[in-house]
Amino acid sequence: MKKISLLTLGAALIAAPVFAAPGPGARGDADANGTLTRAEAQAHANEMFARMDANKDGRLDASDRAAKRTEMQAKMFERLDANKDGSISKAEWDQHSADRAAKRSDRGEKRADAGDGKRGMRGHHGKRGGHGMMMARADTDGDKAVSQAEFQAAALARFDAADANKDGQVTAEERAAQREAWKAKAGEWRAKRAAAPATPASE
Image 1 (cartoon, rainbow, N blue to C red):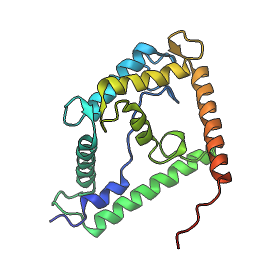
Image 2: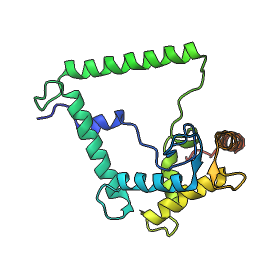
Image 3: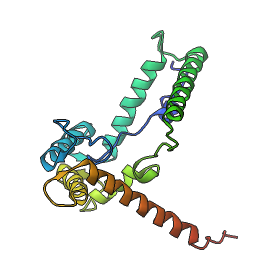
């Protein structure tokens, strides 16, 4: 029997980005020229949808998330099971933990050397589960699933929002401006949340 539950391993997994949003590095920039065109954004959205549609039924819903989670957990188990005996020993788990700690330390040293004090972001807008909220917005018909058309429309809407001069392409400057706008909105949201009266505890 496998000594460590696959569900336990799920906590170590990192969620993949959902939308082909114009952001750092311009994901989807097929020709790597630093500028993302609308056609590239659309093609990238289609590629991402195909990868996420685990059961290939043309829609993203809870069943796809469950299938992807199971697949990722199985891959994680295979990585941890160093001697491939179908179980994870304490030594294997401890080695995995040590490796992760070493990588975190290495990343921290590199950030310190580069003078980068920025903290890692948890999903879009710095909030855990931000991609889930974007998926909910993409579900325009409210059927608890996102079709390829809905997914593509959401991705292109984000592209169009970043395309400030409406020339059909997003430059590095436009991406930077969009990131600053996101930060400003996030700051406003945090300020409103801090100013909101606390909810009375139920007696």
